[in-house]
Length: 57
Image 1 (tube, rainbow, N blue to C red):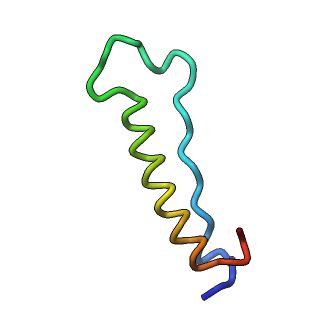
Image 2: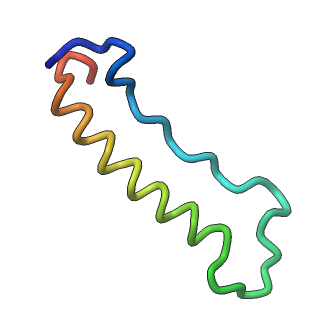
Image 3: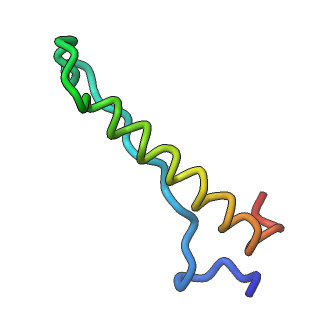
């Protein structure tokens, strides 16, 4: 399927933590750890989506 209809929407990137969301106290996990995990997942999903929709690149 190569159409970009509503049944296969382009993945959206995660929202980066805002100012003040990280307390800089070394929390484990940190909000940045969660963000980086979500970003890695987004990049994989986007690569798969782009493979299904080569004209969208």
